[in-house]
Image (tube, rainbow, N blue to C red; front, side, top):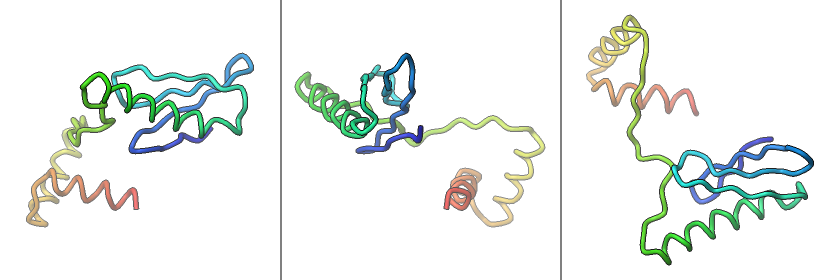
Length: 107
């Protein structure tokens, strides 16, 4: 099943033993829900995320955000060298060059 995105969070949905299980991805807190009707999956996901945000506020802590904007990428040294050289040729930092390459691939 396709992931569901809501308020910057992403959820996976898996079918197991006659039920649909929803899990919020990319955060350390464990957020799970069970749903018996596929028509209610999106609504259940939204409620799970909204409840998480409200619970965090009530506890006086910030809800965990899925991504912080920092990424450690491992690659073949030859590819690393080629990327660094391409970045210099375009008068960009390697970080800026990689961000542009990812943006182009996504778009």
